[in-house]
Image 1 (tube, helix red, strand yellow):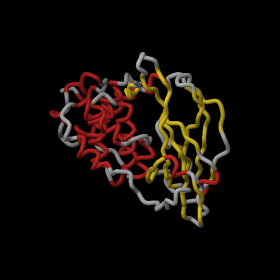
Image 2 (image 1 turned 60 degrees about the vertical axis):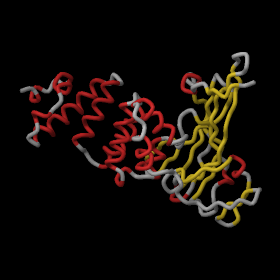
Image 3 (image 1 turned 135 degrees about the horizontal axis):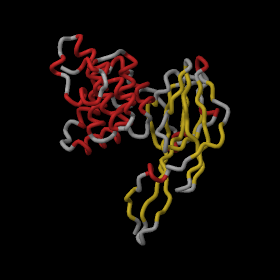
Length: 281
């Protein structure tokens, strides 16, 4: 009997290397999705990663360990919607302890206006055709492109019901499924979710997922500097051993606190980790 225990893909895909790039699929307003071929040593597969570009900015649509297939004919006639089949690669453990390569595919609905993955369905839903600007699957299913990706306040509400910090962070990461943080924020813009994303980042960092936390902190930072955000970013950068960058945020945090007359409330670790003498009393 085969165990359904998944082996973490992060270690399996550590030796990934890009080796080719296909011509981009061009959507509305010249926004593009580019497929870049990748080869992983274990499990032995060749697939693509998908990147969205608009207004001079590029970001991955899915997590780095997600393979993607996209075809030009999957772009809607009005160029607003693109279908794609993201595939999660992994292994299951056989009855004798052997690793058996496996995969699980989906059919994703991508907005070519924002790079948001609006929704997902079963993989075979991507087998069909456009009838006008309406996708009809071979099984008769009809696409109704609407945002189904769960908003961050729902993710946070569920996560807060979990007491253990690591389990809470893992729940948040899992709740975003296979989307990249950038694509997720394209669905739910930081400008409309400043506090929620800051809290989401904090709980991710608290559970040891500082790299992912920083993605959401950066999204909030692009909206505007916030004092508590600078401290959160500095702490994550420090734990990731990016000390120089961390010190810069610690200094900015300290200066903001001093300007607000709150020098006495600056945590001791900030004083210890920064070379900015003005923080010391």
